[in-house]
Amino acid sequence: MLNPVTDDFRAWLAESLPAAAFRELTQPYLEEPRGLYAGTGGLLVAPGSTQEVATVVRACHEAGIGIVPYGGGTGLVGGQVAPDGPTPVILSLERMTAIRQVSALENTLIAEAGAILQSVQEAADAVDRIFPLSLASEGSARIGGNLATNAGGVNVLRYGNARDLCLGVEAVMPDGSILNGLTRLRKDNTGYDLRHLLIGAEGTLGIITAASLK
Image (cartoon, rainbow, N blue to C red):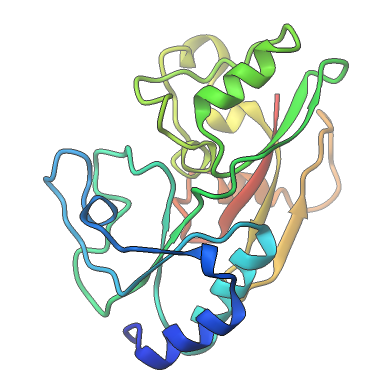
């Protein structure tokens, strides 16, 4: 049984996160782009780091409050809204936009989940490489959402889905612990491949905060 966001919970988070992590909960965060699906929310939080995401998730876990991870909000099937139930926390990755690393030698880059897909493409292009995931909303869709939904796009037959373009992920798990899996290896046979569980899970198993891409 989930609990709604309360004033006490808001106050606790306000003491635990910087002021920049809080946003006004406006209507675009509560509906899909066409307005066909609408949801509820009790608080909008936009962490600026993986540690801040972990703080929010851990607090929600302990308080029994639901979370709706929010990327670019470009999905058209209502996956970014909670239509009913106790008011959840809307956790937006919009402030985590850094391209942490680009390696032309390895043909890899590491991007935070809030990076716009077009920015990832441009980072690859700057070192004479391509990141082939391409779709109509690439100017506003975020790479974390692309991975969470295992996006395909117009080049899917040649290069595969988002899953096929990802070498590793960093993610915050439901209890607030952090999975450090930003490997850049093509061949990694060390234990369970949690990356493939998280990709396509739409945030239900953990929130992707960064990814190693090829």
